[in-house]
Length: 207
Image (cartoon, rainbow, N blue to C red; front, top):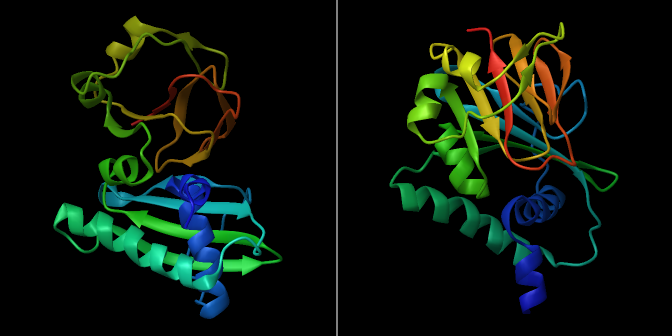
């Protein structure tokens, strides 16, 4: 495989190409939660688990099945082997319809999601985010237009927060209380990070 192909097949795009071919070889029954907004999303689950549904359109004519099958095995096995546990990342669902891939992955923790995708991602208490070194100098706004800054954020140490760097839908378990300027509030359980976002996005939850 040439260097151009290796560059293209990195991170999430690489995994999606793998899933497209694997679906053509073996149709898997659907088992993921319905994505009502029909877009790539991150769901916060119980016990710290993270579910990532990836919905993207891709062509099928650039890579052969053999290459992608091999890369699927390498991607999943290599990550899990590196952690010493076989199920830190689990592929739950793969569907392809009219060259649109719908892939569901489950991660045992936010740290696994960040490491697997090589992105910034945190989900936990604000106090833990502060200890982890995340910058709290951010302007927040509530659905009702109430504003909060660094001082107010640092006073909410027992509340949960999601911090991320990707343009993606976020579906938390608790209601959303504040979002940063680069996040669009959709409803109490859905927020979308802007595709034009620069820097980290912040979503503060009510609990």
